[in-house]
Length: 374
Ligand SMILES: Cc1ncc(COP(=O)(O)O)c(C=O)c1O
Image 1 (spheres, protein in one colour):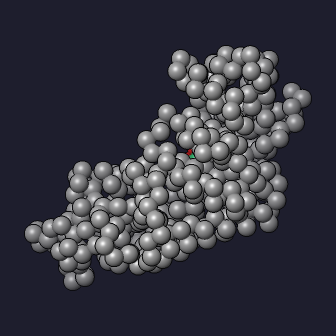
Image 2 (cartoon, helix red, strand yellow; image 1 turned 90 degrees about the vertical axis):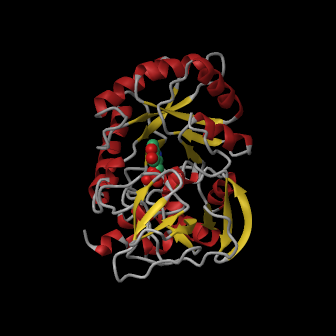
Image 3 (cartoon, helix red, strand yellow; image 1 turned 90 degrees about the horizontal axis):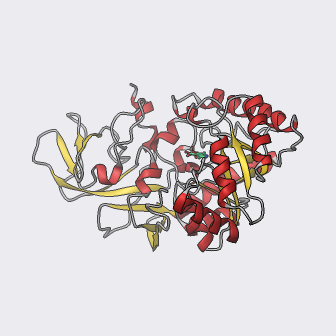
């Protein structure tokens, strides 16, 4: 594996503020804003709406910023995330997930539907039946049919399946608003994004025709992953739901989802042991960095100030970093910035983050939807 690929996410060492209590999550709002403007500008130029996925930051304040920059509504992954955003007055919400609305979840979905402008993903008749039952007696609930564009996770395959599900959903009293897909196979390899974007737009174009074949003109045709966010913004789609673009992370730089200056979030960690030769140990382990590691990455995060260092093992509270012989190593007690491999699950491990503008701390902001995984 070449160092260029391994370390692409660590190109620009950040200047960390002094006096941080580690481990902590640091988010540079200047970079957040630059990332937000960059994608919003790209999509505005193509006449495609942005509905950012809030699972990345789980922060009401960052969601507000995205809306101020021009986003039209928010995407969420769970009822819990939707509840947090709606409670803060951000109520144009799409749950891009096949919510299984039974028992307590049915009651929560109904309550949310009554006080927000909600749409929900479906990929089965059974799921749609539960949704229809949950909102019975209220106004029609908007649904979008999920299409599998190659990620093979959720979503129906092909225009006929879309047409069949749309007909059934409409008969159940649901308002079929459109179709969506997540080209998750854009994460498979550094250059997978180009084909994944083509797959997203092709499947969505066919799916939209599937809706038209049963007399439904789709209002929303929605693609979305950060690596494909720009390439999928063609005239086959009218909405992009990228999420990770706003914070960036090590794998996004390699996957073409973020430029090298697009990493806004770091974990600050202290070197707590140098007893074992060839290693230093950080106070950031699996409960801070997660064990998320794509096959094309070496180690569990990058340390931009020490590009040769490899975070090769994690225990709950220990990050064991190999320092190749002859390479510089951080000293005992030094605080280093770590770029996580995948920022979304890392954010969810913190109650709050240190908000900075460059090296200056401007506040401590809550991770409002932390732990709201259902
Ligand atoms: C359904 C759906 N839409 C949008 C996104 C956002 O994609 P990304 O994290 O690549 O920005 C995701 C991410 O998992 C997703 O599952």
